[in-house]
Image (cartoon, rainbow, N blue to C red; front, side, top):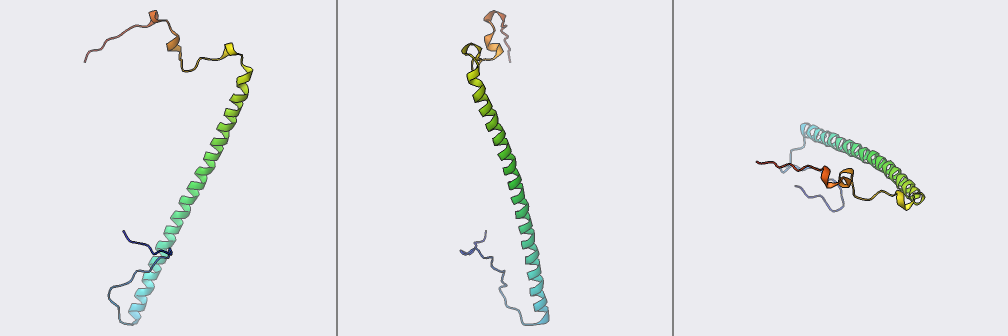
Length: 110
């Protein structure tokens, strides 16, 4: 992995051996700069797409949170209207309310 400079600038890639000044060397430098520009543009485009995905997901989450908050608020308002006899017991299902005589035991051997 490479280290980035402290100020956040992207440093250009350098060659270990300097080339002689010629037309071919100038075209090679132009080519390298164009390739780097394309790479950076693609990276920026990918970042924009990712940013848009995050913004879209945040919007979905915001609508879900507001919907659930409304539902919770509605349930909170409906709770005082019920009498204490009408409240459902918490944590019990239909099976838990059945008498023990109706349940059958089954043994399995492995």
